[in-house]
Length: 261
Image (cartoon, rainbow, N blue to C red; front, side, top):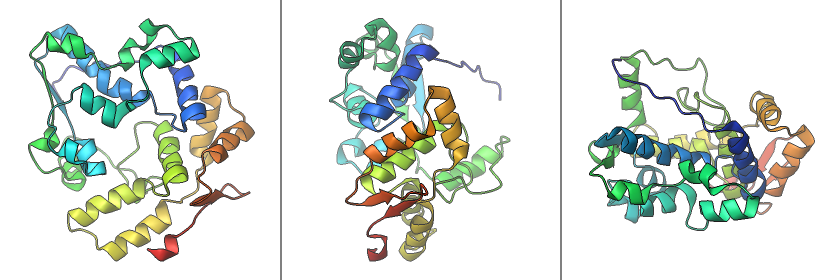
C-alpha cells in the first residue's frame, strides 16, 4: 500500500503478567492492552516528529453515546482516562501493587507532558465522516481485505475479531458482567444505519451474545498464560453476575431476561 509499517511487541514477560492481572483481578484480560494501543502510537509520533495521527471511530461516542465524547475530536489524557484505562487505574498503582518497574509501564501510559511540547494532532476519522462499518468494509475490500467464511463467534459479522484471540475473552466477560456482548454493539449500529429493525436485532442478540466460548479461544489463552481449564473457568465464574446470568456445568451461558426484550 506504499506505507511504512512499524510493528511493536511489548516485552512478553511484562505483558503476560499484565494480562493475568487484568483477567484475575479486574475481569478484563485486555485491561492494559487497550492503553498500550492508544499510548504507543503517540510515543512513536513524538519520536519521528509525525504531525498527524489518524484513528478510526470515536469509540466513546459510537459505543457509549457519551455526551463528553460527542464533543471530543482529539485524544487527550481526559479522554484516555475515561474510555481506555479508567480514572481509578494508574501505572503508579499497578507498579506499586504488583511490584513492576514503573519504567516497564511507561509505554502503557498516555505521554501527555511530551505531547504538550509538540504540535501533534491526534484525531478520529469518525469526527469527519459518518462511521459505518459496512461501508468501511467495502472500502477495505478494494485494498485486498478478506472476510471470514462464517460469522465470528459472539457476533453475526464475519469481518471482526480476526486479528487476535484474547478480545473474544474480553467480549465474553462483558456479557458475564453486564448482560450484553459484541452482537449487541453491532446490532445497535445496524439499527442506527437503517439496515436492521429492532425485532431483527433482538433475534441476533439472543443468538450470538450468549454463544458458547469455544476451546478455539480458551485453549490458546490457557496455554499462553499457563492456566489449567479448571483455573480459567473458576476465574470466569468469579466475574459472572449471578443476577443476570449463569455459567452452566457444560460451560454454556444462560442470560436472564432475554425473553423480556
